Image 1 (cartoon, rainbow, N blue to C red):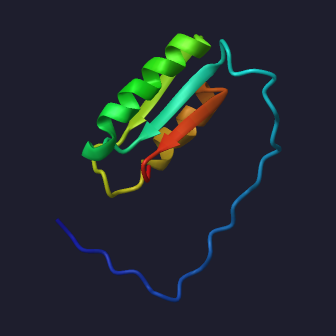
Image 2: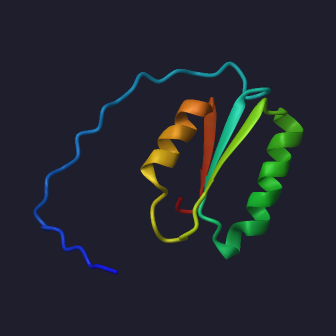
Length: 94
C-alpha cells in the first residue's frame, strides 16, 4: 500500500463538452445504472431497477456497481457505460 500526496495548488482539468441530444422516449432504450451500493439505499435501488424494467422495457441494461462506497466509479467503466447506453441513472453519491 502506498500513500500519494498531491500538490494542493494543482491544475484544473479541461472537460470536453459533447453535444446533448434529447430522447423521444425512454421506452425500449438501453439503460445504464451507476450505484454505490450503500446499505441505506439497497432496497430502494432494487425496486427502482425493477420498476424501470417493468414500465420502460429497456432493450439492454448495463450496470456499474461500485465496490467501494466512498470512492468514485472507475472512469473507464463510466466511459464504457456511456458508449453502451442511451441514458443512465446515477444514484447515492456514485
